Image (cartoon, rainbow, N blue to C red; front, side, top):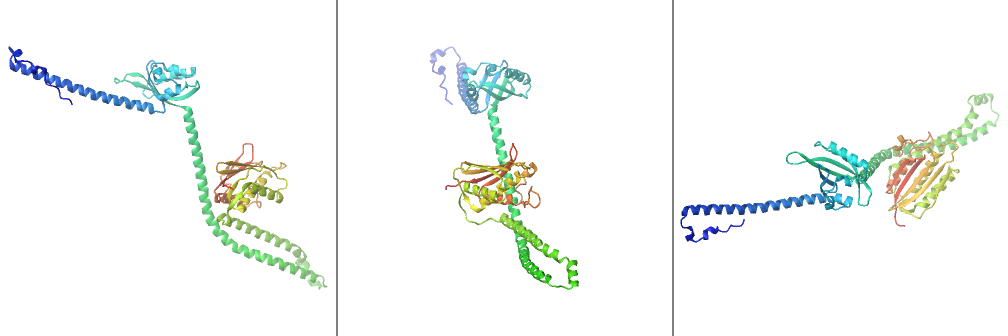
Length: 449
C-alpha cells in the first residue's frame, strides 16, 4: 500500500499561523492527514475490486466461449442481451450484430415463432420450459435446436428476461445413434461371450461322455460285424441242410419256427443294427470334435476354392437340383485348416438346401456373396427357405438343437461349425431376410497370401 506524503499544511510558514491557536491548527492538520490516508486506502481498495471484477468478467467470458451449447439471454421484450460463440458460429453473425436484436430475427419459420411465444407464456414460472425452435444457420439452412427456456431475475427477485440454452438436434440424434450402436454391439458381444462360455463348459462335459460312449459303441460295432459273418455262414449251412431229405418232424419244426423267414430277415436286421451303431459313432465323433480344439495343420487357405469345393460336393452328393448362385471373387486368404473350413462351408450349404427343400415344388436356391473389408472377409449364405422362427434364432448354434425332422439331423453341425469358426478367430451369425429365407454370415480375419 503506498504511503501518503505529508500534509502540505505542515510546510506553511509559521508567520501565516499567527492569530490561530496552535493546538487548533495541529488538530486540523491531523484530521486532514486522516482524510488523505482514507482517500488513498479507498483508492487502493477500488483498484483491487476492479481487478477482481475484471477476473470475474474474463472467467464468465471463457465459460461462454467454451460452451458447445447455444446460449441466448434476452430481456422481457425479447431483445438479445448476451450470447456466446456457439450461437454466433451457428447463425453466422457476430456478437455485436446479435446484441440488441430481437430473438424473432433468428427464427426460421412461423411455427417456430408460435412456439417461441408459447414458451414466453409458459416460462413465467421458475421451472422453465423446453421448446424446439428452428433457426436459420450461416448457410441459410434450417437447423432444429432443442432449447431450455428459463426466467431470469434481478437481485430484487423481479423477472427481467429469459435465458435459452440448447443444442442442435442433429448432434443429439447422432449421439443417440452412436449410443444405440454401441449398446447393440455390447449386447452382441455379451451374447457371444455367454455362448462361448456355455460352449466351453458343455465341451468339457461332452468330452467325458464321448469317451465313455466310445468303448461300448466300438464293442457293439465289432460284434455286429462278427454276427454278419456268422449269419452268412449259418445261411450257407442251413441252405445245404435244407436240400437234404429231412424227416417230417424236422420239416414241421422248420415251418413252425419260420426258419426260412428268419434267414431272409436276418441280413436286414444286422444291417439296421450296423447302421444305428455307425450313426451313434458319427454322433460321438461329432461330440469329440465339438469338445476339443483340433491340432490339425494350420496354413494360409484361399477361401474361394473352399467354397467351390463345398458347393461341388454337396450338389454331387445329396442335392443335384440345388441352384447355387456364386461368383468367384478376388483371391483372399485366411489362416486355418482347410479341412475344417471345408466342413463349415459344406454344413452351411447343406443346411441351406435342407431348409429350402421344404418348400414343396419350389426350387431350392442359395446365394453366396463374398465381401472383403479392412482386414476381414465375409461370406453371406442366403437361402430361399421359410427362414428361422424368432424363438429359435438364439438357440440355433446350441448343441443337439435342430429344426429338422427326427432322424434327419443331429443338431451338432452348426455347433461344431460355430466352434471351428471361433478357433479360426472369426464369428458366425444368423438372421432372417426381409424377403424371406435365412442368411448365415461367416466372418474370418484376412492374412497376406
